[in-house]
Each structure stands twice: as C-alpha cells, then as structure tokens.
Length: 505
Image (cartoon, rainbow, N blue to C red; front, side):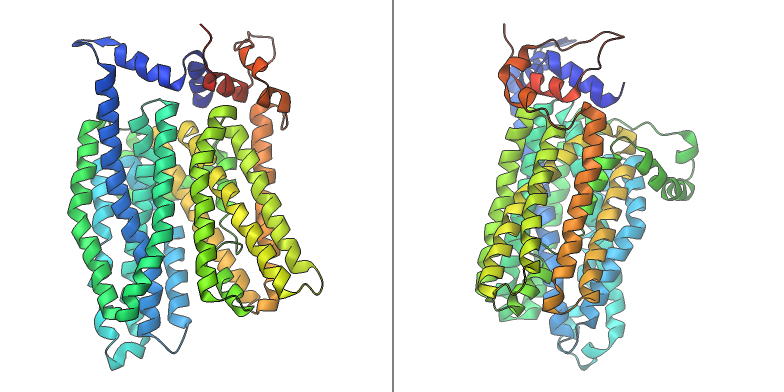
C-alpha cells in the first residue's frame, strides 16, 4: 500500500482539524500541550514563511520582467539579445535543475535556502547599468556575463521554489491535510500577486530612467536578503521536523560530484517510474501554451488592434481569475478530494482553450468577434490551470518520499522549462499574426494530452472516471470506509471525501 493510501485511511478516521487537536492534546514528557499554543505557533510560523516567500518571489518576478526592459534599452536595434537571453536562461534551467534537486535532497534545508537567496544578488554585479550609456552597448560580448549571472539567479529561484513549496511546507504541515491546504493556497496567492503586481510596478520606474530602474531593482533585492535570511532561519528553528536529516544511501552521499552525477543520470528514469509521474507530467505539459497573457499572446493582441491599455486591463482580470482558484481550489478539494478536483479543473481548462482555439479557425471571423471571444475563453481557462496546479501539487507532496522530493520536483521544473521553450519555438516557426492559430492549436493539443494522461492516473487510482452520485450525495459519505482482503479495494477518493465530511458522533 502506498504512502498516500496510508495517509488517506488515517485521515478517514480523523479529520484534518480534529487531528490537529488530537496531536495537541497528546501527552509527552512535559504533559499535555495547549491547543491554543499549537495554533499560535503555527500561525507565527506561517507569517514568517509568507514574509520570506513574498520577498523572494517579488524580487524574482520584478527582475524576470524588468530584465527584458533593460535589454531593450541596452540593445535597442535588435530583438536577438533578448531572444538569446531567454532561451539560454531556460536551457540552463532544463540542464541544471537536477543539480538543484540533488542539493535539496542531500544538503541541510537551511543551507540550501540561504544558498538560493544568496544567488539572487549575483545578477546585479553585471555591467548593464553602465552599458546603457556606453557606445559598446551594441557589442554582444556584454550579453555573455548577463546570461551567465541571470542563469545563476534562475537556478537560485528554482532551488528556492523546490525547497520551500515542495519540501518545507510538507514538513511544516507535519501530516495535517488542513495545514497543507492552507499553506499551499496562500503560497500560490503570493506567487500570483507578485506575478501581477511586479510587472506593473517596474515599467513606471523604467519610464523615468532605465538606470534608475536597475538600481531600484537591485536595491530591493539586496535590502531584502537579510530579512529573508532571518525569517527563514526562524521558521527552521521553530519547526523541529525541518532539522531532521533525510534518509540517503551511503553510495549517493559518499561524494558530492558522484552523487550529483548519479542524480542527473538516474533522476529522469526515477521520475518517470514514480507513481506521481502522470499528474506531474500533465502539469508540466500545460506550460507548452501561447494561450496565456505572456509575451506571445500580448504581441498578437496588439497586432490585431487591441490597445496596450486594454491588454493591461485584461491581464489584471486574468490575474483575478487565477487568484480566485486559490480559494475555490481548497474548497473543492475539501469536498471531493484532490485527485477528483484535479480532473474537474483540467477538463474546465480544456473546454475553455478549446473554445478559444475554435475562434481562430472560424473562416472570416471579424476581429471584433475574434478578440473578445478568444480573450474571454483564455481568461476563464486560468481558473482551471491554477486549480489543477494546486491539486497536482498536493498529490506530489503526498506521494513523493521526503528524500526524493528535490530530485522529483527538479525533473518537473526541467520539463516545464522545456515545454515553455517549445511554446516559444512554435511562434518562431509561425511568426505572423495570421499564423497564430497554429501555435494556439498546438497549445490546445497539449492541454488535451494532459487531460488524457491525468485521466489514466485517475482511472488507475479510483477505478473509474465519473461517479457523480458518490461525489455529490452526502448519503454516501456515511458508508463503510474499510474493506477486507478478498473484497473490493478501497476507493481512495471516497476515503478523502469521507475524511472531509463532519464526523457523526
């Protein structure tokens, strides 16, 4: 029986909130622990974790967007440097993500986080602020240090994300599904807020002066480093689970270089063979899309006559839909379970991107119909995307062993970057606005493939795909939770549903 199955059966006897109180009331050498003290400590830990994650994510998002503005100022006559920069950054993320996963799995948690924070300030040692006012700014040799240091910043960001979102939150939750859901949802809200607000702030500063924008971006990062260091250290010392070493084999831990090489060679096969592979791979596939408010679709909308102000408003509306998923997702998962919620969210996204894609292929569709129809469908699809992201993240957190989390997540992040590169490649092959329907069709096909793969996972886990009576009728929540050898296997999603239901005295 898998670890996930054990967890589900445990939770079927004791709900998430009840389990917190039960743990709090358990006696140890010092006697019973006060429930209010336990919750107060958890709330304090949450605030520290959120503060560190907010600063880290904010700086990463601001730099990620601002870098292209800075490059446009340094190399105003060509798009080639920006393209080389983006592709090299993504390529190194694909190739070196395994190394970050190895570090997360093999080194002390606090050391890994501090290393990832320290890497973020490397990028501001580049000569970019001087190059913008220098005649040599047109020379591509300046791009080499920019790409190398930006790669270090990217790897630091990936390492921080893997360590905090896939490892630390699981340790802090300490077996409580309720805590894990709270942490996951709030961390995703922070990510989406920074993704929305960061790109809105830095252009205003850049409009005044590119050099000033570079200084402001670098100053924010440097000023936040100490705060990140101390807040994450306080989280580490407040949660005893974080200081526990992970189980590693002597062969893998005998040599750092040998162990990293072993992880790089064996990481992908281990990832593919893992029981959480299908939901993880389905999530990675969703990154191969042009039907989102990224550079490709924004460029297309402007090309067909949508104003930049309207694009900004639409991007804000899309962000609101994305944020709503962080509230709707936990509600739906508490009601029907993470596995079942995932298939609902993914089907919703497929329906929306399918509608968006249809508008491109209707003959002689006027732009007055094409733009609103496509944009509305894409905006609605963001709810499904981030709802499925939360569902898949919980599945991976519960299924993947602690000593495997870094390696597994690094492979997932590598695939996400690889599929993102393929999305860029699709618009390179089909660069004209009238050809945008082909990348859109490829994006819809990627979502459909993700649906099929996740459906295979759901079918293997539940034994069926659709079971509305058990999903919505409360009478089924009171049925027996256990079976014996020789009878039908336990439906894991039914156990999740029963665990979320109020316990009848």
